[in-house]
Amino acid sequence: MIRTLAAAAAFMAAFLMPAQAQQSLCVPDIAAMEEIVTNAKEKLIFSGTSSGGVQFWFYANASTYSVFFRHPTTAQICTGLHYTGRVNSDRA
Image (cartoon, rainbow, N blue to C red; front, side):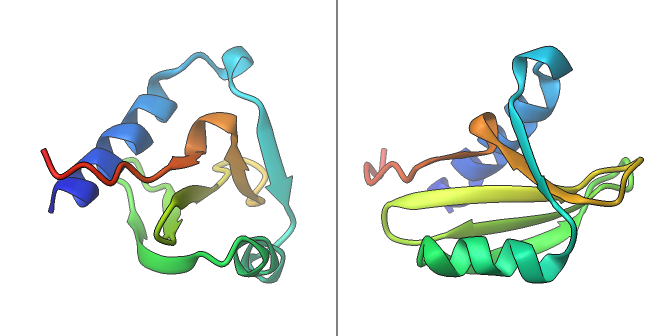
């Protein structure tokens, strides 16, 4: 539960950052995204659609996580520096 809340907070914080501060990586489709997460040995934890209509995917393994989203204007699948990180193993 704590991991889920921490992940959601990190996900929301990334959306609140100014666009110019975010370094994004976009790929053309879901297959390309799946290749990236397979190479990182991450598995799909959950996916959904935000209240603003943005589709997203949350992947993780024991030590890292990645969040991808469908760009609302280009329809590409994107992630970025502020959408990836290390899993906090503390259970505070």
